Length: 333
Image 1: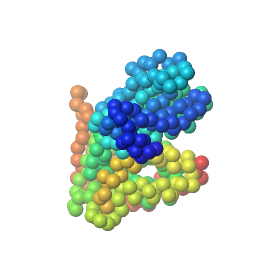
Image 2 (image 1 turned 90 degrees about the vertical axis):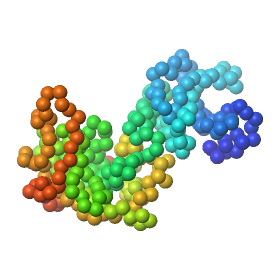
Image 3 (image 1 turned 135 degrees about the vertical axis):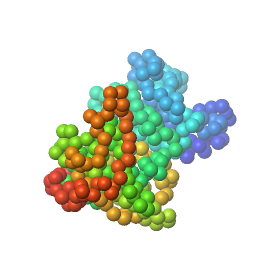
């Protein structure tokens, strides 16, 4: 539809807004639109008849503009909410945003109001852009996500089963550990350095075992292979193939992948190939080299630090033993 609208817009005399109906129903009507000149993208969603046009409660960020629009082509004009591509928003990313919001509106559950659904989706995108920006994942974040997915695919899925393994992947920005199965957690660190001698710990709580029966630090070493290896998009594609037959788990995976800052619209940015070198596992126990919240003086917080892996050798664990704490694979829903 975007391509068709672009063709129509190229023949239109500006300024104008060329639009096309996407979905029309009793409670949902959506249009795509392209601005003339410039080709700026718009999503237009018809709002309930009692909507007062107030957009103050909708999320806002640099990559999009939110505003009301009153359609005039109908016998009784309707109010629309317009989501407009921002000046700094890449077109491909904004098109993915539009598809996501439109899909949520069209497939919303019974009793879910259109404004509530739109607010929820836009709020996720706002968080996405605030955390990840408009230019995709940094090289370090790409490596980190690849390492988490490698560990999930190669070890957690076979051991715990797809649904349990994907559910254990905690991608919220308040999460302390990357994977948690009940009272057992795994913190995954990934590096492509030739000599991986240290790991970065993001906070004084990341290696905290309070409330846990076990916490294992998993250190994955990769090699960057230009023109070879496995890229991050290829890794994501492998998961989609694995989960294609279990839609609930596949949807859960896609939601978590998005929260990690990955979208297909930016996949072309992730061209580095990775080759697995080795994995080392350490059990975090009371004597493990770390900084805890209780070690800090009053007024000190948000601490990040590095741990030299040479000092962690006494805590080295076998991967099979570490995985043994999470039990065997169960059925997927």
